Image (cartoon, rainbow, N blue to C red; front, side):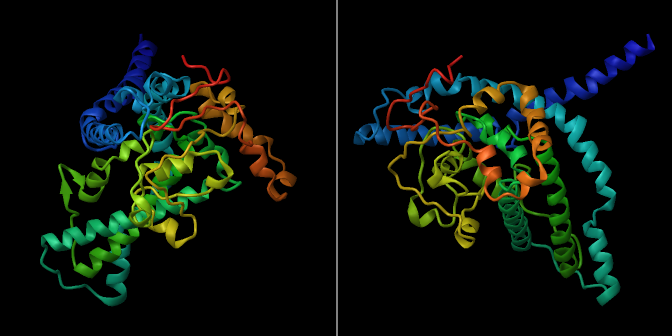
Length: 368
């Protein structure tokens, strides 16, 4: 009976509670997949549909067809994303948090930086807290996290880490849940980098202010994150082509720009790594700007990956198999890693031109 009770408690703690919290996350504002943010994104998509329909710029007969219809939202790849969205919650509790917890004691926190600078230069006089200071602190956190996300994203496109990030790019159609198709190793690296970076920033900022400063939030969410999530963030992983135009796209990352990032065309490869801001792409030479005219795109990393990434288990295990198969010679041979991981565009891959022409799905990637 003790064993059964232990198994029951483990099931509750490691499976039922994480999945329940993940489902409940659809009803709060702590993640991009909240219903409010989904609603605002698809409201913008509907406005865009009506405009394009009126101007004769889309062949879609209905809004459902405009956003991809069943060919996208019930595609095998999309169904896998829906399932993985909940499995990811289990992986977070079972793998991500324990690993981060092991490393956490070795990471310098804001208090460590404050103590160091206090010993070095003495205590600072506490400044009066006010809204402008909170806004400034929140802006700094947002810019730093976005800057780190850009470079982490670029790092995961290198030969050493691509096998893990390939899981995300293996999606042959894009739906909002595709944003959660991220390998747990990538999440571990992201969380550790965030702890290190934000800890240093907060420590320096708070020491300069003489006390802890709270960041301004909207409905419990950092205000800039709330604003960007509300501004069509869920359309980044969709087939709705929404361009901000060449000028604005030098600063803000549009849904169309992120769809370009998922394209398997050689022209689009290693472009638009930015998450919320394309400013970093502009500064570091990886920017690809779009126009209101939709481009015909193919998503995924090759036809063979439609067979290799068909199950939850394959999303988790395949990266480790790929890395184990790499030899020292292959790692150092120029371009060998690219040909191994990113296949040329196959003629029968899924063609997904979003909202301007009908979507064609080949027999190589059947709709289920």
